Picture 1 (tube, rainbow, N blue to C red):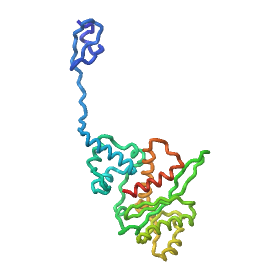
Picture 2: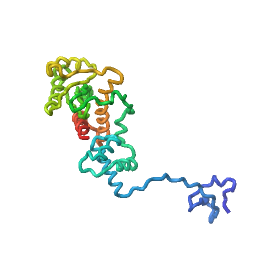
Picture 3: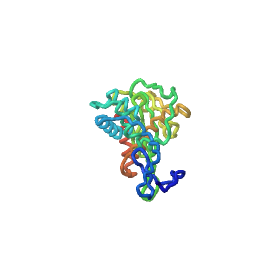
Picture 4: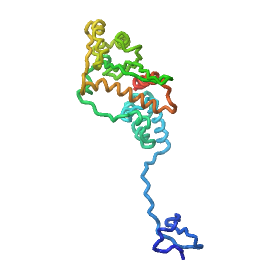
Length: 277
C-alpha cells in the first residue's frame, strides 16, 4: 500500500501517467493511482497549408519593403491590382496577421492612436494633381559626437489630390531658402502641366512671409491660406504625421541601430516609399 495517507494524497509528488497520475513516493511497487488532472484545452488554431504560409511570408516581406503600410491600405493595393504582376490578395494579408501577429515596427512607430478626422477636413476639394499643396516645416534633430543636438529643417509638401509627398532639406529657415525650395516644388508640378492654385500651411512666420513671393511668382494666381487651429489644422498635420510615423516604423524595423547621420536619407526613402503606393 502507499505510504501517503489517503486524506493527504494531494500532498504527494505526482508524475503524469497516461490519463491519470501515478504516485511518485519511495514505496517500492506502489500501485496507488489518483484521478487524472483536467487536461487544459488547446486554443483552436486554423490550419494553413504550405502554399498559404508561403504566400503569407511573401506578403510580410512586401509589407516591410513598402514602408509598413496599414493592413487595410495594403489590402486595397493588392485587390485593386495596383502592384503590377503581384499575385497576392487581401486574404493573404489576413493569413499573414494570423500567422505572424501584429507588426512590431508598426506598433513602435505608432506612438499615439489614430483619431478620425472631421468630414470637412477629409473631403477633397482638389479636382486634379497640383491644384492644392499642403506644406509645413519640420525639424529632424540629430546629435553630434559631442552630444549637442542639431536641428535640420526640412520642407514637407503634399498634394491633396494624389497624396504625392516631397521631402526636401532646407539650407536654413530664412525666407529666401524656404522660397527657393517651395519654388522648385511648384515648378515640378507646372512642368507636368499641373498648375498650382492654392498652398496651405500653418501660421509660422516664415511661411507667412512667402505671400509676396507667391504674388510676384504667379501674379496672384496662387493663394496662400492658413487653416488656423481646430479641425482645419489637421489638414497640415495629417501629412506630416504620416511621414513621421512611417519614419519611426522604418527605423524600428531595422535590425541594426541606424546612425543619426543617416536619418535624413531614411526620411527621403520614407517619402519615396509612400509615393510608390
